[in-house]
Length: 220
Image: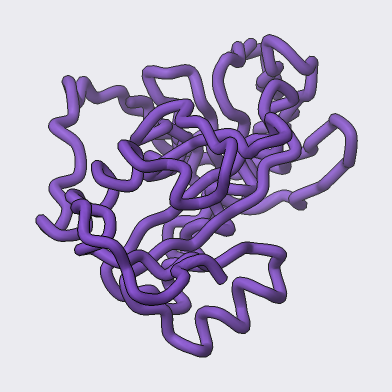
């Protein structure tokens, strides 16, 4: 991973345009070729980013990141580089989840039609630039669906899925991608936020997924 702290401005050129004015920022360049630009706030969410496959071209005073499939660009105007270092992180062992949550993911992947008739699994742990989506699948019409699974579903889980959807919907091979928030228990506030963002909610019955028939429907 390469870490660059620079005073720069950033312009995104694609289907939409966006501009970040000149300011000190952290630029992360990962081994998968993804590039993200961060400020010293907003937790871990980048100000702007480019998913792989993409290529960085460095010229005097200007860095250009071009997506290999869409041609979209991030153009960084570099006024001053304050720090530039590269670190070898090696292979990450991945996130170790709560046992029940991990098992829910495994069971739902095995019984993906719990989400609806005609659903098919694409893969578990579908990687994005900010981490893996629990399940990527397709509905009965072939549209992509990203599923985030929690044992107890709250607002933070909906926010996490929202960030994944923002990234996934930049991929023209997947978009449009809709989201499903799945948990054994979903708090009312999380349901309201999910509905506002067009995200579906599914209450998972752990015993039913293990083969014991549920008494009530589980899809909401």
